Length: 236
Image (cartoon, rainbow, N blue to C red; front, side):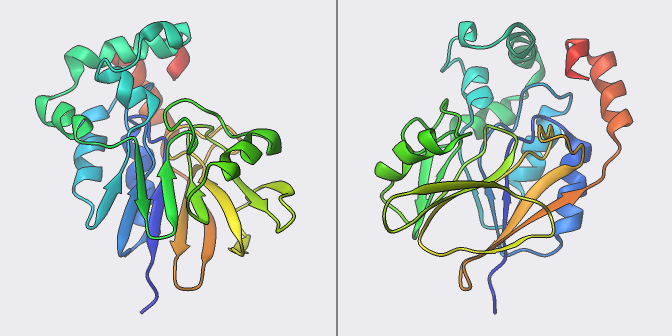
């Protein structure tokens, strides 16, 4: 049996996008969630409940999740992001809060490190270029690291002479991972790579294969919920 691991990140309280991803992914053996379940979107409790029910779940804390728990000061967020974190306080259920409280900042599973931002700074660092990726490879105790936070599906590879290369991941590309790599599944709820479809990845550890997928969802339904929820209209 080839293990299929669903890798998702940055759901951002977008339940339509999450449902579309879970349907599209089909049957998986494990789900690894790289944080930012909340923030920006209108459905934090539905998203947390749905993720918490996934079989063999591994889930870590993102910066918006940490801010919802009061672990990060709002001054570190831009205005709209800060307002959507404030909106969470009266809108998150106790069950949702308890779930977020239980999440670690970093996890190591076999030869994979899970971190929202980077292995050095799990909550905040953005890995968008080879120079920031270089620093992460230096501090990486495992061959692989799966990150989110940038909302862009990306891969960084380190060759044996410590050169680092980065590539944007398109949906028709099946990656055969060799050596050390940092991989990003993109964002479920708010992609930022000029493709509006929800983004996720399937990782097959036995073959060391990573595949990025994209799926359509009802964006207008989410926009209308944001606009009636009291969240900043920019979020829509």
